Amino acid sequence: MASSLLETNGVDMDDYLEQVAASPQERLRVLQGLLGEATCRQLGIYPIPEGFRLSVVIPVYNEERWIRELIRRVRAVPIPKEIIIVDDCSSDNTRDILRELEGEDTRIILQPHNQGKGAALREGFRHATGTAVLVQDADLEYDPAEYPRLLQPILDNRADVVFGSRFIGESHRVLYFWHYVANLALTMLSNMFTNLNLTDMETCYKVFRREVLQEIRLKSNRFGFEPEITAKVAKRRPSWRIYEIPISYSGRTYEEGKKIGMRDALNAFYCIVRYWMFD
Image (cartoon, rainbow, N blue to C red; front, side, top):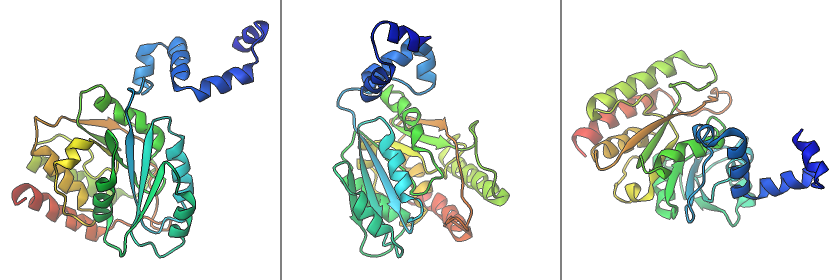
């Protein structure tokens, strides 16, 4: 019907759709007209403030299989952004691929030797210039299409830090039972020390106002980053407001390149206690 009306009025449908796709403001206007403002907000469709810029920090280690598609998906998100990729001394073809992907919106930082996710994130945060900073893993377990929903509490001035939870209502790939148990146990232990009521402390998707990261001194080199940042953010409540948003999750198997293991779970347990009680 819409196509017929447009053609009746001398407007080519394909040309009109191209115009709408090219303009975030026009796209928002059309969707709000079709769905209503309230429904659009529930879906994470809302105007991005003028001057806002997102820094997407991506730690990478041996991700030649996934990195091209990930960066394509990140670039496709219609939000002004810079992409900061920190390669943690990959030993496969990842670095060669990253050199091809480097561009005006994408900065590549090469670590001189392998140090771990936390060290890579620290380096990426140091170069971030955006209004908000988002952590993105280099595989395809987390979907960049969910950035607008993750940013919404910050842009609405309701939050300073946002966690994306894999356990409160969105779809997820069915995988390892004991990983699920370990995540729940570590989140519960973290909550006992921090007095937060998070459901997924170990999530990759964490978003911060840049000022938050500028006031935190991070030390963890490996996956201890998750409990460390959680503890240090919790210590600044109520000055820093924390929100949790449901996200989808497409976990991968060890055969597909998953890296976290029992050693990292034990280290997370240590970091929960250390960074709350002694740092």
